[in-house]
Length: 280
Image 1 (cartoon, rainbow, N blue to C red):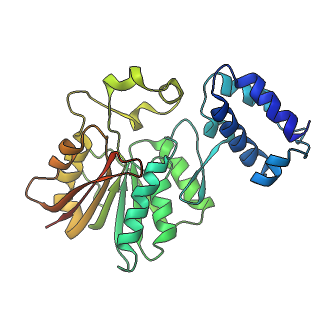
Image 2: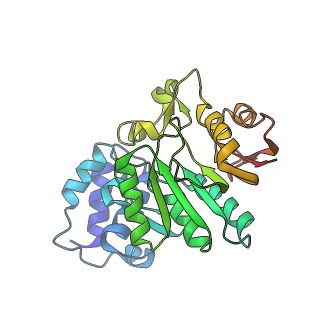
């Protein structure tokens, strides 16, 4: 079977479940990651696929709605290829903007200490380590499975990151130093939004990485602000991704007298997506 024939099979099998553009995108991701083909080779469609490619099983997983990143076992983020599984959230393009903000502002500051809270696949921590090579990067998560995946990604991507298993609502581990930067893409979606979200997300991605109680949607930001009293050095910065519907509430979590220059920033799509601030 050629790439062209496989593409036709994808279209025929998935057209009842996805739009034409979605099928095309899924196919390109699939063959690029599974077969290592570039865009030109995919376009020509002449190459034969490997006999070892279990495309029938993979197609059925896509029919059931499983994210293609889990099917191929990887996702691209900030120019790096991360291995992913249902134990971790799939890295999003918006979070690349968060990393870019940290890199652009902190490059040249020297050996800063960075803490990534809720690291998941390790995408933020690893990308920061690779792009701020003299920084000391720590990454925390409450999930042992997620931390295992993050460690693996750091290893295969040659990133220097110190990992720690920690639920931030528990006591601060004694081994943590004081940091110059705290960065986080924490859970921020209220439980009541599950019904309007894509089942591709709700059925497969880890709930603990996505959802927060309806009555306290900014609980993670309030906790990060509280932790910053001891964990963040004077003049240190917080960079956090937020829910577009709660910009004022997310910013208010840091309006506790400890921070200045509290700023809500929109993403490339014009949605309120980040809160940045500096400790006094």
